[in-house]
Length: 484
Ligand SMILES: [Zn+2]
Image 1 (tube, rainbow, N blue to C red):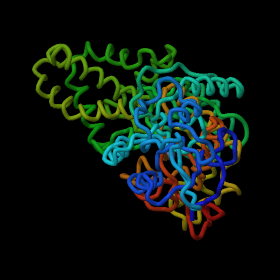
Image 2: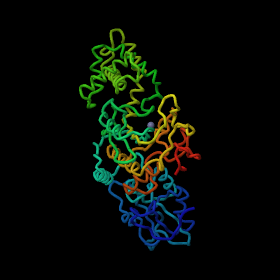
Image 3: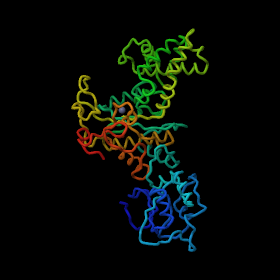
């Protein structure tokens, strides 16, 4: 049921309780506006018609204050041939029609052209700035938004990062820790957060207190992965990848190995002692003599990056420069096997900012007990507190999100581990998370309309590939309450 009322349009939607600016007018059934609504649906377009004030479309457009740089607006022709008295549309009956002011998509514009209708439209930026509701994922930040975010970060003592020239398809990936991680453990992660060390998580969000930014650069290429997707296990299985890495290393010139490791670790900020440790660890990995769990932190990432460096050099200078005597064909074959993996891994890792939200996990971490937190019937899973996440967590995630947006120059797509690794199953975090509450928190900070989204839409349930947030409805044994 549409909410209908008769009123003049508000000119100051920002800060009002309404979810979107709405311009209400009365219309006759045969009028072009209704045709338009039929053509492009209720997500219609018309900005600036008002029932209570005469005036041209152009005048109304000026009043709405579109900014320089708005998408081009066809202003030459008003909605219909303007009647003599200059009023655009006359009130014909008592049936009010809701008109939303929204940006026009190219498809919608085509439909309008067919109808011979040229309407004023506003840019995405203007739409957001007047409190419009939209999916803002991947949209470019406006200058006022950048300034606003800087001010917000400053106010909350979050150090802003350095904006990057390009981030392709930026994603803001939510996890829950599935184990209570305390302040000392988070601090340890922050100290480690360079190059191949630590968990590769950009920020940690405890139930109380500020977020800890563990890897301030965000969107880094050289960090450990936080998902199977980043590891590229859809491209090559872990065992096959590790075998290929060893095979390539074994047919590389010895003189090339150490320099490849140095290039792999260049610019990561590791101190000499750490460099020594991860290099030795990578060597152990290549030999296959040490169990994974006993390798020093960062060894496997260093090994993979070093082989990536060898293959990159071979591609640039020829395999003869890098491969051991008579081993060029083997070397080339190995690099070919991993070429998609190297390319995809770099693209995926550098486009994702992973955030861990602290949350309970299992009662008994003993491997003999069921450790599957995605099984709502597993008696070893600790039920969530009520509510599952604190207001402080939503507020701090929103701030970290805005920090990521400022670095990327765009609103990253918010997504979840449950979504990103759905192809592989096995991960379902963050569980019992109110995604729209996060979106509403972000929108409120920026003055965007309540109901705006910044990534995947809320869909609660247990099904990989269908739902976006794990929620054990209808039992709610783990989540505690029905989903939002
Ligand atoms: Zn996760």
